[in-house]
Image 1 (tube, one colour):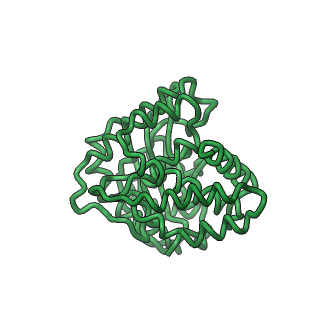
Image 2 (cartoon, rainbow, N blue to C red; image 1 turned 60 degrees about the vertical axis):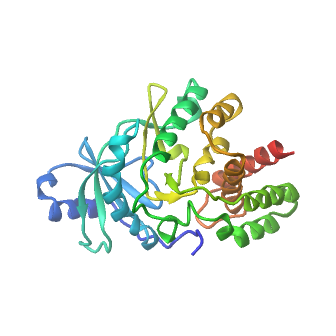
Length: 298
């Protein structure tokens, strides 16, 4: 299964209140309200001031619940920044068909250029977090598969999808250079032992406080394998000196960076080509990322 937009089910704060009341009566008195940026694949709600409820919005994301519950408590003590802490595992009920999680709330604002006064320092802090994650023992860790849309696995999984997106975008992009970036990424196969990867290191999953990186959230695509997918942030948020600092701080070989560009341009291409569920703003941003990658390559 390649990554597509899965059919989502509707749910709201009232459903979450009923789920909490029936399964965690000790928290039934706490107010439930939507999180401003509550996510798409999993939707998050505030539970009081100190907890959150996170529910898969489609069947494709259900396996991530058990994975996060099992692995985040094991990884957290060894990482330099806070990550989500599960405090409860919910069951299907009240018409909601899947398991769900209660987490300790982590204070912070979603990362954005406006909120980060020192982007090179942010890049350095993020690189240190990823180095620590990659250094952890991978024994019994979840290998790439449908649970994480094959992050950490071979890029060839998305070869047909990428080539079709380049074809569909036609003359609106430099298709020849985009294809060269993709082919270079495919040729740089991962041959090293597997390491831990977050899988979706994006601005929306990075929190800042007082301008500094303060936490990393949303580990639904967590897995072990090739860490190249975690490098996309170099082109989706970082630029200039910050991008150079990030690359210098991560001891990864040129092939891994080539695959990192591959993961980045794949996602940018399919969104720019009109991935179902993507907004016009997301498509425009993806086109800008393609231009950046092409300009860097030429």
